[in-house]
Image (cartoon, rainbow, N blue to C red; front, side):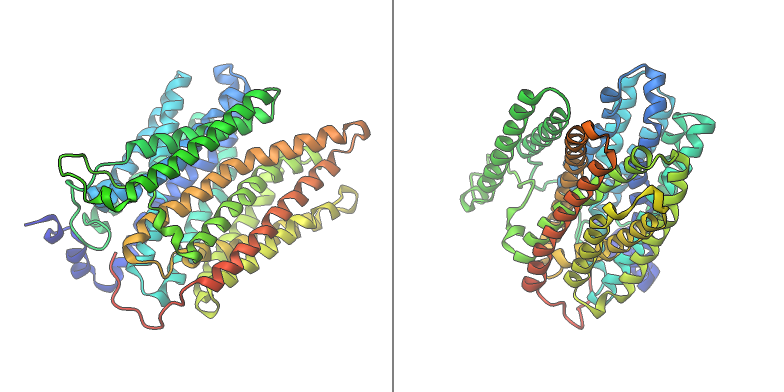
Amino acid sequence: MTQAQGPHSLQALQARYGERHRWLLLLSVMLGSMAAVMSSTIMNVAIPDMSTHFTLGQSRVQWVTSGFMVAMTVSMLTTPWLLSRYGYRRVYEVCMWLLLGGGVVGGLANDFPLVMAARVAEGLAAGVVQPIPAIIILRAFASEEQGRASGLFGMGVVLAPAIGPSIGGVLVDVFGWRSIFFMVVPLAMVALWLSRRYVPTSAPGGVQADADSPGLDWMGLALASASTLMLLNGLVQLRGDGSTLAVVLLVLAGLGMALFVAWQRHLLRPERQTHAVSQVRRRPLMNLKVFAHRHFAMGALVSFTYGIALFGSTYLLPVYMQMGLGLSPSYIGAALLPAGILLAMTIAAVGRLSNRMPPAHWVSWGLALLALSFALMPLVHPAAGLALLWVLVILGRIGLGFILPSLNLGALRGLPKDLIPQASSVIGFVRMLGGAAGVSICAIVLEWRLVVHAFADLPLRAFNETFVFLAIITALALLAAWKMGESATPAPTHSPTPKD
C-alpha cells in the first residue's frame, strides 16, 4: 500500500472524519503556529534578565531575538520543497519536535552559545510551519469558507502574542528567564498529539510525498540567508557608530539579493528543466512565476510594508509609553492586553464577514485605520490624560484585524493550485523580511530624531515624528492594496471540491 493510500493519507482521513476533517486539520496546525509565534514574540521580556545572567551587553544578547528572526525568515522559503518531498505530517512533526527540543534545551542551558543554538532551531521550525496554514486554507476550503477559516486561524494565532508577553512578564518575575523557554513546550506537545490524528502523510494536493523529487536549491538558500543576515546586520550597524561597515553590509546585501534573483531565473529556464539526467536536478527555492500574477505581486508589496508597520510599531509603542510617557512596564503590559484580545475578536468577525467585500477592500480599510492611528499619535499628551492613547491603540488593532485574515486571501486567491505552496512561503518571507527590517528602521528614525531634539529636551516630539513616519509608510501600502484589488481574479461563487 502506498503512502497516498495508507491509513493516514489525506483520502483515508477524509473518509474517517468526513467534512469536519479540514477543521480538525486547521486546529492542529493552528496550535503549532501559536507555539511558533509565541516563541518568536515572548523572548523580548526575558532579554534584560538573560543579559544579567550571562553578563553580556545588550547588543550581543539581542541576537537571541535576531538569530531567531533570521532563521525563521529564510526557512520559510524551504516549506514547499519540504512538503512535496516529505509530506505534511513528517515536516510538521519534525518542526514541533524542534520547537519542543529548543524550549527544553534553551531553558536548561548554562552556556549562551547553547541558548543561541536552541533559538536558531526554534526559528527554523517556526519559519517552516508558518506558511502551512495558508496552504491548507486555500486548498482544503471552498472559497466561501476561506474567510471564516482565515478568521478562526488568525484569532488563535494572534491570541498567543497578545497574551504571551503579559504571562511572560509574570513568569520572569517569579521564575526567571528560563521559564520563557518552557512556555512553548505544552503547546508543541498538544500539537504533536493532534498531528498523529489529523495531519495527513500526503503532500499538498493529496498526492504521495516524493522522496525522489528534485533536490533543495542549496545555492539559493545560501544566497538568501547571507543577504538577509547582511541586511539586518547593516541596519543594526546604522544604529551605532559603524556607518562605513553598515554601508558595506547593505551594498553586499543588495548584491546578494540580485544574485539570488538571477540564480532563481537561471533554474527556471526551459533548457534547465530538460537538461541531461546525469545532472542533479534542482527546483528553484523561490518560483518567480508567482510575481507574474499582478494581484500577488501587489499583495507581496503590501505584505512587506505591512511587516515594517506591524513590527516597527510593536517595538515603538512600548518604548514610547515607557520613555516618552513614563509608564511602568507592568502597566504597559496590562494596558495592551485588552487591545490584543480585541484584535483577535476583530479577526474572527472579519473572517465571517469576508465574503461581503473583496479581500483587497478589507486590507485597504485596515491600512487606512492603522495609518490614521499612527498619524494621530502626536495629539497624545500626558497632561491631557491617556484616554486618547488607548483609543488610538485600539483603532490600530482594529485595522490590523481587518488586514490579517484578508491579505493572504487577496494575494493568493486565483493563483494556480500548484503555485499556492510557493506563493504562501514567499508572502510570509517578504512579510518577515519587512518586519525584521522595520524594527531597525524605526529605531534608526527614533534615534535620529532624539538627537535632533536633544538640545530642547523634547523626546515626545521625536516619538511623534517617528509615528508620522510609520503613518506615511502604511499609507503608501494603500496604493498597492488597491492595485491588488483591481487585478485579482474574482473567486467563484461555487468552488469545486477542494483538496489539501
